Length: 177
Image (cartoon, rainbow, N blue to C red; front, side, top):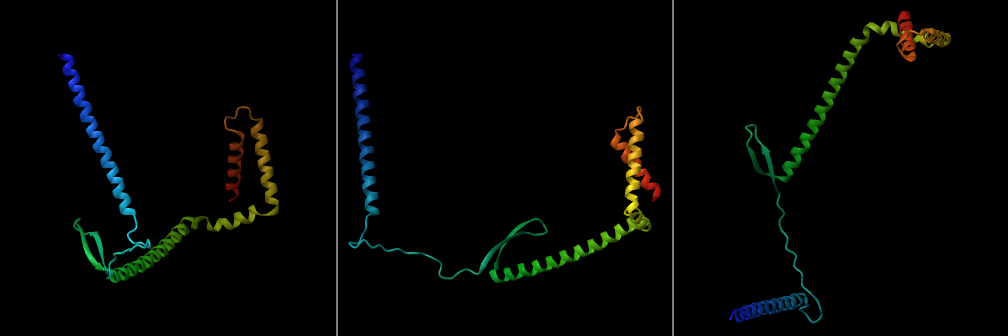
């Protein structure tokens, strides 16, 4: 009796599966025929009609969103031409303000730098005349060579030779000017 019940359940499951498989196959076939029918030409000469739906009157309004001074976000409709004119005028105002700010900053920077370098201005010309004189190059080389020889002979030195010579050269130039 248990084998008979098992066979009955197996038969019912196979039958139900077969019905589902058959219905799925029929539905797939029907859908394929329907799609092919929709893709088929309607007219004997294979011509087709196409309709292009478009707005006939173009909107002149634009949605503009902004945040008011109170922090509330707001949207409003603005005429496109008015918006373009406003943007152009604001861009010109910003460009003019930028130029004005750059000019003021440049002038202020020049004044501040002049004030910083004023104490050295009188000495700069003398230093340039001395430094670029023909014989000064040889004097500087001689001073550097003497410094290198002096520091090379000093066995107790802890500073690297290059830094020691650079320090001596800085001191030499500062003594002059």
